[in-house]
Image 1 (tube, rainbow, N blue to C red):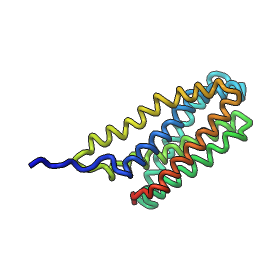
Image 2: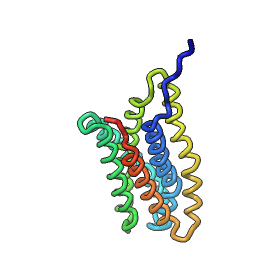
Image 3: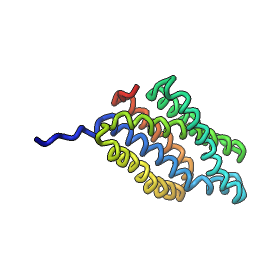
Image 4: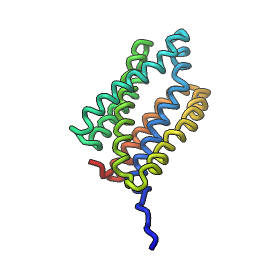
Length: 192
C-alpha cells in the first residue's frame, strides 16, 4: 500500500518562501548598487564604497545574535514582525541621509534588521516542513535565496540607469517589505 508524503507547500511554507525571497531580493538589489550610490551621492572614495557593503554584514552579525536571544522569548512570529518593522523604518532613513557617516550608520542598522529577519525565517521554516521532507523543504526554501540573487542585481542595475534611480530603488524596497508584512498578516501565519 503506497504511503502519501505529507504536504510540503503549505500556506506557511509559501509565506516563508516568499518573505525570504523578498528580503534577499532587497539585499542583492542594494549590495550591487549602493557602492555606486555612495560614490555618486557622497563622493566617497572607493575604499569607503566597499565599506558600504561590509558594514551591512557586520550589522547582520549583530542582528542574528539579537534574533537568537528574542526568538524564544517573544516567539517567532512576533520577532519576525519586529524585524520587518525595524527593516522598514531603517529603509525610510535612506531618503534623508545627507552624509556618508549617516549613510554608513543606516547601512549598519539595516544589516542588523536583515539579520533578525533572515534568522527568524531560517529557524521558523524548519518547524513547518514535515520531518520526512526536511531535506527537500530546506532545499526549496534555499531556492528563494538563489532566485533573489539572480533577480535583485538585475533590477538594481536597471533602476540605477533611471533618473532618480536610487530613490526608486529605496521606494521599491519599502513596498517590498510592506508586501511581506501584508502577506504574513493577511495569510495568518500560524507559527508560534
